[in-house]
Image 1 (cartoon, rainbow, N blue to C red):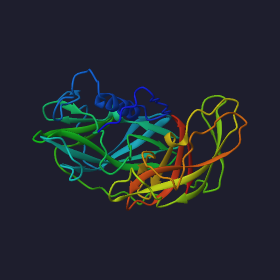
Image 2 (cartoon, rainbow, N blue to C red; image 1 turned 90 degrees about the vertical axis):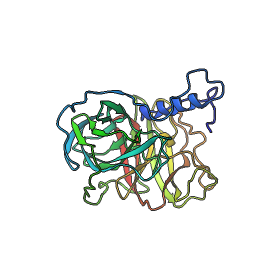
Image 3 (cartoon, rainbow, N blue to C red; image 1 turned 90 degrees about the horizontal axis):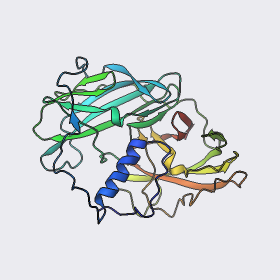
Length: 323
């Protein structure tokens, strides 16, 4: 069931444009009174691609540079799961999953890979990533990385149950998708030497938009009334925020904050109902205002251990804390 808020909904996402667009499209498509054509049944392709790969497909574990906002990241496919045993594909379809590792170099990088990812079948059809979650709101295809940081996770696709696959591509990375492979096990994830709880950083966005950001404490697990599936838990970080620029800060922190776990995966806050950790409702971002304290809450896997918090108000602008 889709809740329709078209008359009052505003989209304020400063980042993750592909994901934001998909959410809006899904809301509109599911609302009563929608007059467009019904969504196609099954798992139709998103387009066609040359049956020959742009370069010979390489085995799992190969690393190639991929362009992100602010610089290059090294991208590596670490596993091919075909079929993916989790999730609920449409009738006549199967889910295929690729383990992915992204490594930044000496600059801050924001990656927006959704539109660049292609899973190509043997007959030349291509598919973009599956938009429904299987592990949680990990959003690997839109990630923010500090210099030297990395992000890990899965990218899933829904394809016809009997179709043969050829390759998976992101820019110069072309990985063999014809059969299950891996896993390649990278070294343990370690967050950078970032400041910890209680440290204030001043986030800059557009000219005149500046915000003091201070993570104060963690609530884990957070008592939640809704929005947490079986096997997962709610996790919250308390922030103190104060606008110190000359223009109003425009965004609540829920859409600029990400939790990073000990496996290098990122988890996106939102959609959790809790009275134990009241959110900023709303954030008063007027210049010279008083500091506000509130919570940002998200759903994470039951076995995840959060080790860092990322705050990214704009493409290529990233701040990080260890927690």
